[in-house]
Image (cartoon, rainbow, N blue to C red):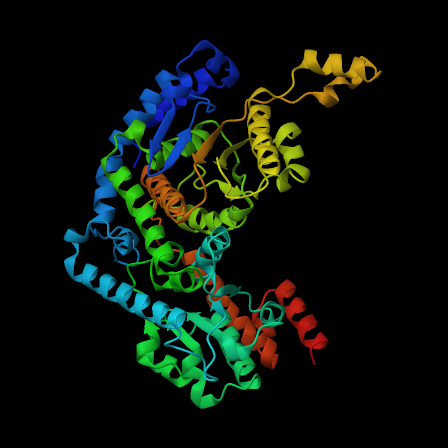
Length: 535
């Protein structure tokens, strides 16, 4: 956890630097860009547009050493019990082969599961495993929610340039419209389901799985042949068998892997089915390379460590209210959705590891969308609103075999927005613009933009399996490092669990009408309205 002495220094640094201009810092130091650029795992972080200088950087470095971030990372990857409320490790890094020697028995389980995943993937792609009708599968639907959906969905969208082996689809919302739309136009006789539920009791997932099962049967797949069309990621083999899924078609989920960190496990089976086993292993290798970078690089040359320190600096000391992730790649359109869960479910906490209430803010609210779409909706608030924010602009340099002129326009927008965040528009420039438009000078403030918004640019050569793996691992480790600095448990989610408990109570009320008098008056009135509308 951040030491009190380091906290005091950072408070002082914030007071000193807050009136400064990032643009001026860039002008004054010709080496600033090179000094604040960090490379590793196929990614490059340019932090030169953050409101820091050499003195602040030294204070952040001292904070990292004081909180023993390097030691905390070593404890994470070697299997220490970092999830204290559930008394377990968080070994998602083991899934991609990091620190196997520290957990040999678990590593053997991981490798055995990967071998089984590869076998079923290749059997389906080769035609050795076919549908009940004898046809090859053409489509695969992943049925899950939270980490069983957001990660695989984001990755499959990002890899659409890779020639698909199967078309990938996702169902997560218990709203029946989700499944009805996804299955519309698909052929049940050539569609494979992957059901992701550790306990095989998750309400949304099991509701959708039963409805998808009925859809298969209505489409001509017999009850006895359901098992040919369904794979499961679960530990509840009994419930899976009752569904019609044999033990050989079930893949494990370990309690030492949290859902939001599980895309590297059998939860990622849909990725392999969609794009091939080689693509999936390249994805794992990209993350493993970033793990190695994180484990070996010094603080100021460590991408996720620097990102965590900057997020701490911006959130706690410069009082930014939200953090945006702005990928200038349509392939990464689901990145912010995925990172919302990773960041806010991990660090959206209000007590320390020791159970003491935290008075400062913890995780920033994370949001964003693919550029240039957001420029025509919420960027107005960013440029002229009075909310403080920080941002990551994610910029792939190349974009495959696409229209180069369109790709150039995309990149120019990314760089233009970064520069606009930096320089804004001054009062003098606004006066000149008002005069040019023939407007009175008192209207000039309408054109002013303060700029000076702290942000980084995260650059990769292209969106490919390796860089995508490295990108996700970067944000995983940034999230963990921030939790260490703030003294949080990044691996539980009791707020989510509370909603599940109350949800079961209210579902019973909606079914029977009993228990309305046990609810608050507002919830009771809404429940009664729903029952009246659905008689």
